[in-house]
Image (cartoon, rainbow, N blue to C red):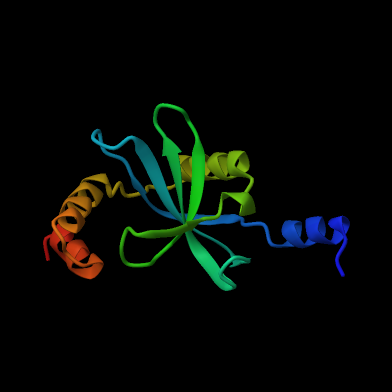
Length: 133
């Protein structure tokens, strides 16, 4: 039997932490800016899966921050995992990283990818076509 204090401690021990940024997704046609990043591996309780690749999306109008588990090698995202992160600290860590490192903007490729997904292409094929391979 767990008490409330045990749950808080477990949650704190399973909090996500930023490690490095892979790329950003920013384009004038999008209503968000996405930041794909590697983080400390956490266990997503709902699925029981371990995850270390994430995407933080920041709404351009409202500033609302949402964090999602991400798939590698494409732009798809899984469940929202914002509750595992201090999103204000995460955003600050990412901004600091960007000040010190050059980071690719994949916005144009992402827009193409979404176009191909909407045309019925599978994820892998949409990525290949979006990158022009």
